[in-house]
Length: 86
Image (cartoon, rainbow, N blue to C red; front, side, top):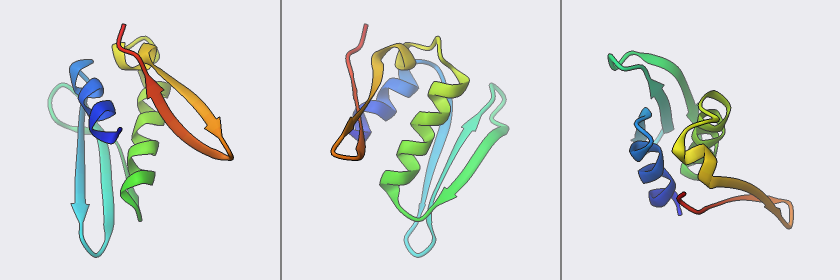
């Protein structure tokens, strides 16, 4: 699922980065058109980092292709991301 949502963010022409540090967690960032960081956070786990990246994209780019195709669903107290490309 993560690869699919990252691909959709990319296809929506949203600049982002994901950096992993084997002993220090994961950095996710959203970049402007010049490659400058406009939002960056560090998380202990990959799953949490991707979830937070998607949440930020939905918040900052609600009209993007990826935002229109992703719906939040709560199953048994756990958030999962599903979406259909429109």
